[in-house]
Length: 394
Image (tube, rainbow, N blue to C red):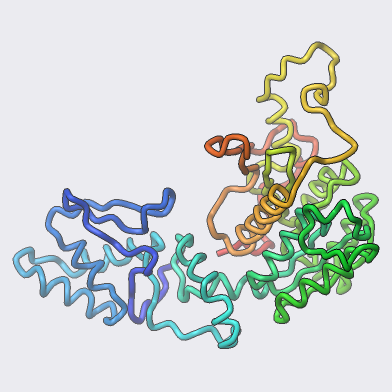
């Protein structure tokens, strides 16, 4: 990873440093996974982060630190290396970077709060803090299912500035949907969900290209066809950067998605709820375990103490209805949108092949499952570890 050229290096506002009672420098905020603590016995590191306020170029920062600590006789290369280390750790931005031409002034105002959140969570060096937002604007997302989970995910992605979203949904709006599928209104009853969803999403953000089709996924071939898109993709490449699965019918649809995404090299995520348990699974071919790996690992990990030959549904029965309200559906959809942002922008950085979420019965009991690629996995064991032709988030 190269260090971007900084015209006027500045510690990110969200990462503003402070001195601890024992003289150490804490930087990056107090959020676990972001902040760091630096020993500073001579005090010059504190001077360095204070001087990196966006008013000086790199040479000016070095000169200011050397001027304020004449007795230490600090070698300039040491100061430069410290600046480089802070930059590589993701705590520095360029106050002199020009606004991206790809985003209009209106768009920059619209996404200004989202940009600062991405900047806060971003621990990669960037030439501009707007780079992740530009990447999101260029992104193409395929969403299967626009009910409770899918509708919330679509809403959050469109509001966040995704460039193109294609939605697939076969059903019509029914009264029993309205307790959780907040994209729809009473006036939409009897209307195809895809029509009502497109109307609502386009009204939310006219800068996003939102399309859709009323279609049922009946097998892997349907998913393959959808991933190719109307343009047929680019050669053998899919037309979309990410597949999001928010449909739960038929029951085998997750296995189909795993199969198709492995074959095409497409990152994907799926989310949903099981009573008070809300979670999202995140997968990227060649990086970590696939959906089948994770499923098999979890079956082995759980001790349900079932009798020989007893089906696991005895421990967690399936019902003809799915208990849910707007909270559980909305949380699962937001987690799905969050997973899409991770896969598209690389923020926050996370190793795929995992499932995470929360248990609403016990807020202090998070869900976190992970699996590496399994040599016995029937889905991905014969596939290469990485697809060098795919663009990774940066």
